[in-house]
Length: 297
Image (cartoon, rainbow, N blue to C red; front, side, top):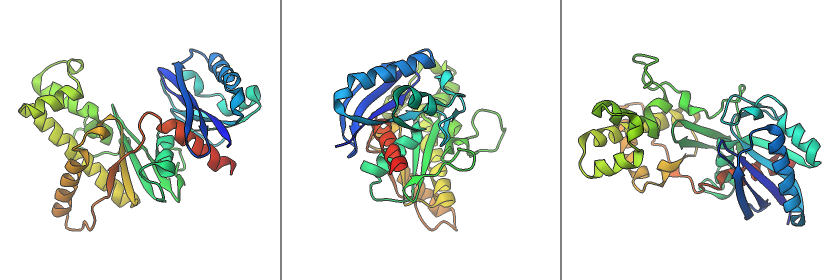
């Protein structure tokens, strides 16, 4: 069995592990994210030595930013030194192994297509909900990056054009978990840092009307965004990722909102098929390996 050393670059930690070509994680660990590119490459080389007995054949990387096929990571992230230089060539020169890099949201989507909730499907949209909204498009079983490497950046969609620049216009601003906190903080006139999403859902269950309304608006705007994605791209399936995806009532609430939208829009002929992502913390490690295998096959 061929093994790949997979890395998931994060702003706080670098996760890494040995993953075989069947997508099984044989071992995994994490370390604090290094402060420099040189230290990052040293970390990678050290892990290669540590796992030398595993017969590592290549290196797969999940990274923030817009990743070109050449190995340059454009954009900005919490790891500023990875943007600019050709990371792929740097690591290949230092290790002597083939390296392939992909955007982290794209890796999460690839994991779902390979071994997760979208196995066997060719046309899939993945919407990752957190402080903002990111995502990925799968077309014919592979990532669709677009001409400017912005394929799947659903968070930029404008859902409310009123008072542009107000901070409540885009999909990210109106349908992320941060948007729930923002609505509650504004209504209660409190500091947004003083309340969490979990607390808001708990208060809503206890009858807090402000929290209930904020959650209702969140589901409504999220459903509008999913409706738009369905008619723009027409995927077989839309998967929801991020911490909110673990809520048991998520799919039920979204389907309720989507059915309401369909009734209101005369031209609407279908309701998106939605589900939650299967993988959570390990998705990027697995998806990075699938991307590697696609590139080397």
